[in-house]
Length: 329
Image 1 (cartoon, one colour):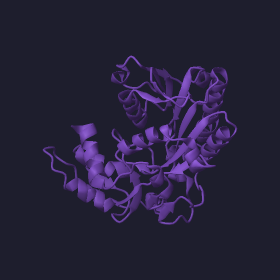
Image 2 (cartoon, helix red, strand yellow):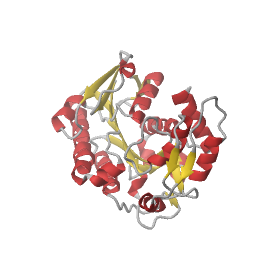
Image 3 (cartoon, helix red, strand yellow):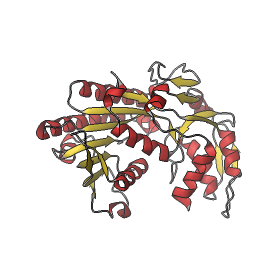
Image 4 (cartoon, one colour):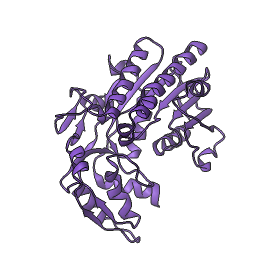
């Protein structure tokens, strides 16, 4: 079977590709497990060469906002799509038009291509969409739960919610078998900081462990809901395999993150035993960043995700240990 990962050149896309290749098979349109023989990483930039060493993997460099390009990637042979193509939250907020081109137009292109693929093949492609806690805004409770109202207060959040509704409606019509997950902040992201407002949550771990000093722009008491990359990838895999009838009328699902304060994260980093020189962590509050973070939920808890068997993380120490094992060792 053919599988496409949009945003496949990114960090989570590449980790997801590795997990799919290691597992070797997914549930196909027939409902039976099928071997993955063609895995396409579609992104604006090519993945590192080592990601293409497996003969089952290919890369397509292209723009998600170009419908013709998307239709050429998601063709009649495509059985599943993981739709991860994105603009970071701050970027979508700063460039209104870009955000809507990627999240509205781009998602429509993906869904229309999957719809056409299903009509051509006689199957129903599975589409798994990466949504976000940015779906919640305003006076959100400290703990977001399954019944918390969807009230986005950013363009990014609105665009993610639109994607969820499109996934649900295309599924209702029988064009696709779609599913969406609202992801907590992913920690730890490797590499250099990006424009995401939540980037400091990875930076407070990543920078010191790479010998770089870190100035955290929010107070030590600031808390946020996070999930490790390993668990996020496991959730994507689990969501793909799930019997969609268990999701109910809405195809969007909140995932359970766990709450961590920046002080606890800093303490856990300082307690890491390593031969490497560690950078220092200091706190200097940036009022603009603090205001954004104060508007976020402190944690998320989904009884539904728990009942369905979705994995979750337990503590910050395990998250840090996984980052060291995956990225530093």
